[in-house]
Image (cartoon, helix red, strand yellow):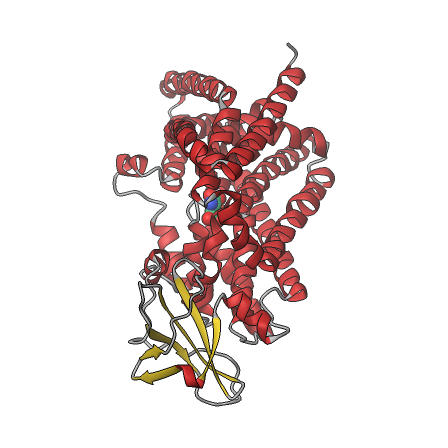
Amino acid sequence: MTKTRASNRLLILMLLGIAAGTLLGGFSPSTALAIAFLGDLFIKALLMLVVPLVVVSMVVGISRIGDLRRLSGIGGRTLAYYMLTTALSVFIGIVLVLLVNPGGAETETERIALRGGEILDKTKYTISGTSITLADAPSRRSYDDRYMVMLLDQGDVRGIISGSQGQGKSSFIVNGWTDAKDAPVRPKIRGAGVRIDLAVVERVKEKKSSVGEVLRDVVTSLVPRNLFKAMANNDVLPLIIFSLIFGGVLMTLGEKGKPIIALFDGLNDAIMKMIGLLMLASPVGVGALIAGRLAHAGGFAGFGPDLLRLGKYFATVVSGLLIHGLIALPFILYFIAKRPVIGYVKNCAPALTTAFSTGSSAATLPLTIECTRSRNGVPAHIANFVLPLGATVNMDGTALYEAVAVIFIAQIYGIQLGIVQLVVIFLTATLAAVGAAAIPQAGLVTMVIVLRAVDLPIEGISLILVIDWFLDRCRTTVNVWGDMVGAAVVERLEGRLDAE
Ligand code: ASP
């Protein structure tokens, strides 16, 4: 079978895997859960290869560059590409969310629907301190066992309360309360009064959240205290740094270093072969992962209503991702990297579908490298350097999503953002994406940086929680696609320099 025919066959099988997984998870969650272990197996096999792959391919890549001075050129161009494309995607996200205004309430009913809560008038509640007792507990479930209830006083929204759904419980904690009658609907979060029992909100609250802290964390994480611990945790960034230095030093050893470089070369070929084998199983793995996740969300019947409720927000994020992934990046691929877009994307399909099904750029890395090197012919010394770095720091999709989500939360809370705040969101969303680990839903956690930077309530995260797992997969696909386009761009720029 020719290479093209084999790759077309794999593409068709992957698409069939996705379709079968979606139908199974959507319509028959119980069957889907029964086969979900196949997806776990696939993810574990991918993760198993990440550490050896990163170390070996980096060392090989550096040794093939031959001259350390050239590395700084490749490094510089890679970082410039990453920064510019991430900034572009955040810009697209901000423009879109301002235009669509998904969290803006045109009518009171719409606002309530978005909050997923109910309006109560003054006769239905009494307040004492920070807790509130409702005459009738609202019956509607919303946002993962939480209520968001708006309190109305003679037609004015006077406050927002939230609480967990409890059996027959009618007492809630006051989450936000605005005193001035005509103040914008801006719940003031009171330390003592806030108690939201969502695991994720608890998790993000403990996170470092100032811009300086995050930058410092990224820099200190570059050097591992213990190399094996970094390996055990699948921490890619410190492994990149170690391998870069190790490969560079090997080269300076001359004759003595050559057998070790040859050993790494052999190891690299062996690992790439293993990845090639794993790719054959990817249609089943991808299908099982999608089926399992959709079943976990309750199939179409469970997930559909959440998706509809947050439809405008969902559509805004996905449209932004599509504009960036289908217009901006292909434009760069065609005009700067001078690559045929359709052929390139077709060869990237196994990695892109795996990114969608795993929601993790790190887990996808073996296939990202395989597709870029073997199928798209980007030389090892470029791909081996650009892609592992990209998987951890270049997240166009995540950056775009963070900006849209934060502005959406502001719109829901009725908070007007000025131009300065938009600029702060632009900068911090980029940074939050760099700081996000390449694992599922890491972006949701780093979003707290952006929210804090513009003084928005962190609890707003709970508004978008229910559909985040799905958006995570969409943005991870764009993250990986951005890395793969980057490899072609850097190759082209390097090639042009060589020719000159
Ligand atoms: N899951 C994403 C990735 O691995 C990160 C995120 O946005 O949560 O690329």
